[in-house]
Figure 1 (cartoon, rainbow, N blue to C red):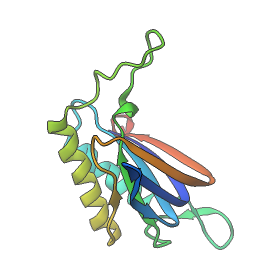
Figure 2 (cartoon, helix red, strand yellow):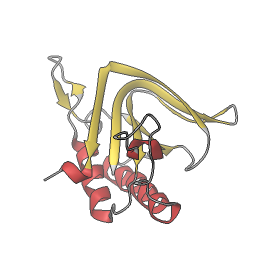
Figure 3 (cartoon, rainbow, N blue to C red):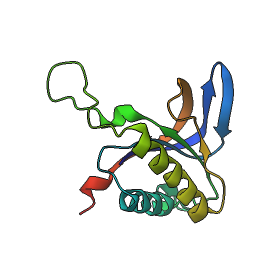
Figure 4 (cartoon, one colour):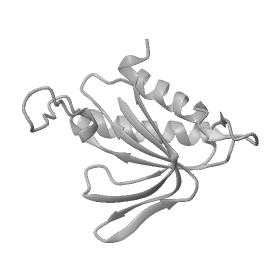
Length: 150
């Protein structure tokens, strides 16, 4: 699984021209699920995300987690994070997990992060054509790949 985590002052996702979900200060997370990803990948990423210290403390040092600052989270599924760009100019998506794997892992990630944070992780709709808006704070953007954890 791959995540793109952005520290935001606000973020929203619209579907069919209507805002589906929105958050204030916190994290906007893009979630990509690849073939072969497992529950262990999801668990590791959820724990890593909940504890990642990318918010400023009183001294202006990135020393606090989203949990510490009581921030909100918006998680959006995005299969294009699995793109292979090694050949040619058209990305390939053969590594993207099918719905039977991707949907349960995306939902499990959101549910587990909800448990770890003690507040609802807001979501897009898997497979929908979504319009995502955000104001990146910092800017702070972190990319995490569960296959690179060892």
